[in-house]
Length: 93
Image 1 (cartoon, rainbow, N blue to C red):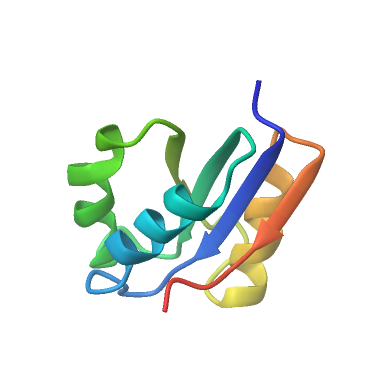
Image 2: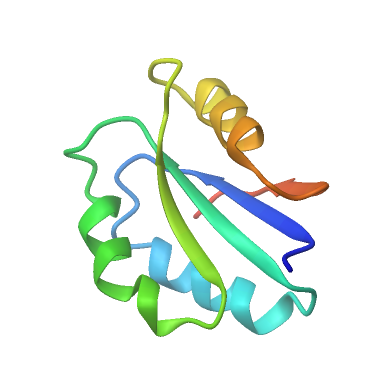
């Protein structure tokens, strides 16, 4: 069972998201899941995450921001969608 949700609000982070995920997977030792929160379906991050998410041991989920655009709303969405007691918010860059 996961102990930690790592929320990553993104906006066109296609160039950064793979490195961010790799660093998390290398350094976080507790069972965790990653929630990548995006605003628009056209976000360049989405296809990159879809292409790589099954390559990792821990769950990586795409979560659409339900409160409207912006990092604050993305963080709020990610925290509400988390299923773990502990949550960390970090940026992709």
